[in-house]
Length: 222
Length: 297
Figure: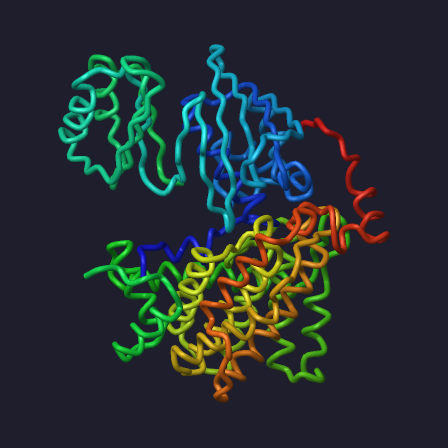
């Protein structure tokens, strides 16, 4: 049998009513919060397909906000998440949208941070609570939250990847997968690194001071 | 060692070659996957079992009502008549427990998705009831859950467990197949019998559409959980009696995936077809939401 986590099938432990539309929505929100690198003060969220048609009845809207607030899928406060978002200073708006040929359970987050930072993140809930982030600020990504992951924005120059792997090695971090994508030669690039272990803050700090590295975001397992 | 293809056929062959049950095999795979001793895996799965038990208990109290008011109280009603049930108290008790968990789910209570929240009642209803009948320990029940999980993983790999992708057959049909495997495991059946039981349930769910009234996981979802708990127990008994599925389970799973892909979007969790479009379903939908294109919480 291929390696597969049976606790993903018999699970997650969650507040109902829908694994894809409630628990999956919370996990999408958690991933979006981590991928953005900030806690938004404003979130305009486009809902596509089944998310648009049945999201309100399933609590998809509440779930996405719960995730942005950092709540777990078994958090009993889900029904009152709107009040908690207001108390936390997070303004949220939902729009029905047609996002094209994407999974029927797809959401697009247009997020604004406390100092005006912006992030546009898209992801889908693919069944049973499993999720996948597919886009971050114009970059195509594949993030399921199953590994400890680093997103590293950098300039496409020789030696950057060596500095990344050396920095991770200095903290004893083993790389499971690594993927580099770039918009143009010598332009901006995004490297996604999936790791077997949690990333120590020191490793992130070390990466941030390396030449040609523009930003680093750590996304834990969710 | 190369990784064998992830099919029920391969899993059954591997279990039979080693002379162990599907649950024990699934336990070994999970222990290897998570680099944990088997005891730790069993303990973690027992924790999930305890969440299932708590949901059963809460649901059987019958005090919750769902957002629409359409769900709540049936589990207690069914359990109250279980001693006089036409199908016998074992089936009726399993159905009551499946309804109980589904009602808790609809009322925004805590459950274990198995494989999904919408189909979360089937497995605990069957597992706990078949476990009682067999005098199973918590470790036996945890092993049966792992066997069910392995089947669910194979279905997710080759078809789908998402109603939005494959209709209700992918949710409650998969849950029924998983529960049938758990019941055969608890009754001491062979891995091959477990595979036949899974095939028999899934075949009876082929084509079942996802048509939730008002888009809520309430109608017809909750009662379908009860129906497929009964179906899973019957399929387990058929397989244990030596009845075989003429179509092998892996082919049934492939077929379920193909049927799911050919279902129109209206019948895949969009609430734009099936029971959701009946006059009664539409009336509930009108009562529940205004249908705005933009909103906040």
